[in-house]
Image: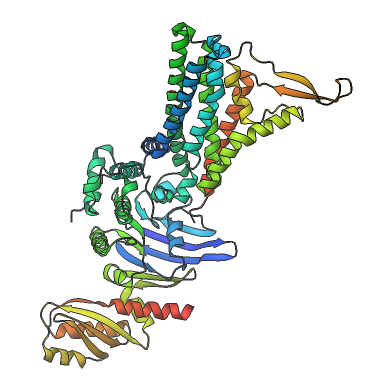
Length: 315
Length: 292
């Protein structure tokens, strides 16, 4: 299987005088999860709609695996799962019928229909309601069906527009687990979200957009470091063993570390001065301390700081 | 969690197969919907009322012959059933995809919008035919009661066939208007006003006052349904002079009223033209409309 590819070339969408998206150029290659962040009206949903041919570009191209979505939608979307806004399903159809419809449209072979639907339904934990009419379901249940529909046909690329919208905390957590599993299955996931903790937890990369313009795109570490230039980045570290106070003292002495905030016995936040190089050196130093580092990532608060920094500057 | 690996590669079906998929599930949606049962009840009420009136009053002109029976029953009421079906199933068929957001569930998939349009149109046609079929069965049931099996005139079968043509055409028109608007209410109101009132009014004004044959109006073409049940078939043009009520005939001003009747061929051509134009332009409008 070739590397999944999402690419926008000078992608622009105007509504009269209003520019919803301005010359977006982005290339996302390979299996990964990319969080798409920005304030309301920034152009996130517009971008996703352009990638699904729900709207036409004023100019520019939205390419999926090298195929222009607007010019050849059927081929471009053949291996794509989408969830844009909060779709409604024909209310008189049962969950099973609605998913069969999408599976048949996507071309899931007839002999695999039942099994495909069963698997996605198991994933979103909606097996019990297979024969219930969708019109009688809650918003959260409908959103689970929408996610199941996006997963049908085993797509290489999944486009999600605020996938946890309308779900209760348990549902949100389950969707996050589903997305993490999809990452393991080597899929490219491009998801917009307002939940920075969610993006920080799930995604490898982040794209920041405002007023229709791409402000930054890259690995979360890199983006948070770039915008923490001259400021303090926050790194969340988890260890396999509980930390001793003597170790904490040694960590405080590492070059660039401005403070250590203990979250629990095996988890702490480091406030670090410097960019990506400083992070690399910090990780090396921690490994040398033999404290059993099992996780080293910018904390959600780091992404939040970056977000606030970027979007404060553009207002 | 179990990995989705079914050891197969999806091949997106061609548009004809996707039309059939849309037909199947849209029909399930229509038949399972409340509006199907509401329309069925409305049609049943119309039929029961006609049955009761026929049984109680035994109108002489209706029961004079099988042809006059079917003319009074089917000729007068079948177009109402057709228009109701077209509005119920076609009025918001496309606009609802925007307003109710059901389009968001479909459009992001590898399917052309025209396939969705045609599939839904075919489903609406089948649901409408089911309703018309129920009305036809009740009509025939009454006809058999009064005239027996031998009293089923061949003209009724022609009228039934023309009714199906009108249904095809009217559904084309309602889908066309539904694809013009994103609001279901506006789409439904437009089609109701046009099919129930506006077309008939324009037809009367154009024929009677301008003395021009209203060959461009769908309801004019649909008159073949009732006309075929008349013996003889009404003339293409007839003019009647009407004198004003006040004063003597000699001093009053005569107003001539012209009545046009489409020939069967002409009527079929009008219905076909409406169908062809709307079934071509409707999907184009839907393709061009954006899910903003």
